[in-house]
Length: 163
Image 1 (cartoon, rainbow, N blue to C red):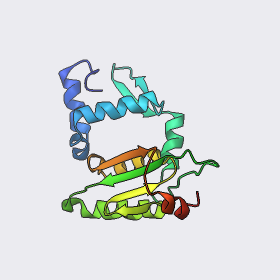
Image 2 (image 1 turned 45 degrees about the vertical axis):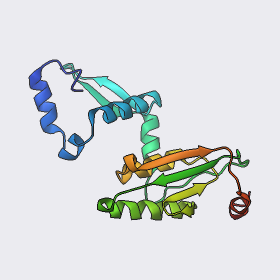
Image 3 (image 1 turned 30 degrees about the vertical axis):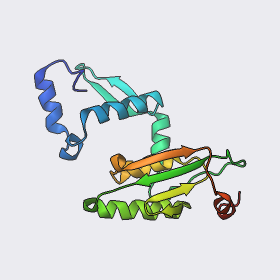
């Protein structure tokens, strides 16, 4: 909205209305997220009568938002395993301990297995659920999502997950 607004007065009005927590988001991160949402057709751009551009959730975005409630988040399990492991690695600082503990609790609840401290594994695609959780707990910069097509000594994991 800022870059598309016609005057400095409009810039000021927009910035004044933005909550402080939202201001903490880096501009490049925000642009990346908006572009990703636009690409996935989760948001639409609407032009107001005064020339401002408003970003709103599309119908698909609304369905997507409703689907990811931290209370009942789940991962759909396909009938056939694609033989790829999903690994979550995180190093969340002590000052974000509550978020770290909450993330650990949620991924354990989803069925992940802890390979090592802060390294969790799961056999099925769970990118959307993990993306939601790391955004929800505000720990995106501390979490890595890996898709591994080959791993040694995974027989015990296959057994654990019934593969």
